[in-house]
View (tube, rainbow, N blue to C red):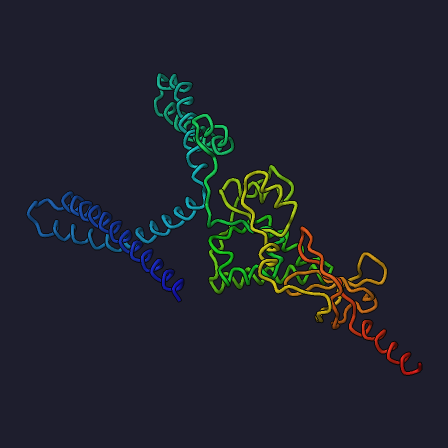
Length: 375
């Protein structure tokens, strides 16, 4: 309720700001149109005291009122788009890009000043303006590409820390616990969704493996639920980092550029990110802290989905993502069975549970009872 109220006030504030901008633009257009109508009427009417001049000014103001509303709404829309695009650009990119633009403009003017002495001023000024625009744009792009080197020349840091900014990687989106963590407030803030991560999740959702396909579709549905229920600020990222081929490298580059932390279950990615000074939020670590402990002898119900590494093993997964290795479960693939926990092993990738089917555990007990009776 509190979050909804805050979002409502923010929307109302943005709406009021848009109305003010529309009216300001309309006022400027009305003033210009009134003056233009007055001048046109005065040029047409010979009598300087004729009421037609006033009529021309009034007609100009009416036209300006209608046109000004359209122009004002268009300007408001463009300003909103510009604000969102600027908000998505890191401050380091803006500073470094501005430095690159200034340097490029200075070099362009030093090299292109002889064009000012060309007799055909229209041609020389057009060429000079074109060169300034092109090199200014190239200077901005060069500054962004070399922002680390440029900012370090001035003793500045190219990274800005943003404690509430988090990058979701593929393993986090595929983990159903992410939605619970967001709903409970454990994972909060702005979640950055990169296009290369979404492409990888979509490829998993289109996989021929039914288990992978289910996990991929569930991840996409989970993102849709978070956006639909407004549980978190999901912000898409347009940059694709073509200089990297691996998705993990792109995720690290995005986090470094935005000063964000990474939400992941990939142990290798987490270690690489930590080495580079990036904060890592592991869903496995959160789940290990919050999950209910399992002890040998406890009964569980699990669906066996695939074969294990060893002979006669089946593998299933609990709702929290824990792997359950069912000894003697290879022939039970595709079935949902009751198992008894025999041991629990904590690994760097999460918790691994070893278990046996209940009937396999109970069978020796019944046999022992029959032996005792026979004895």
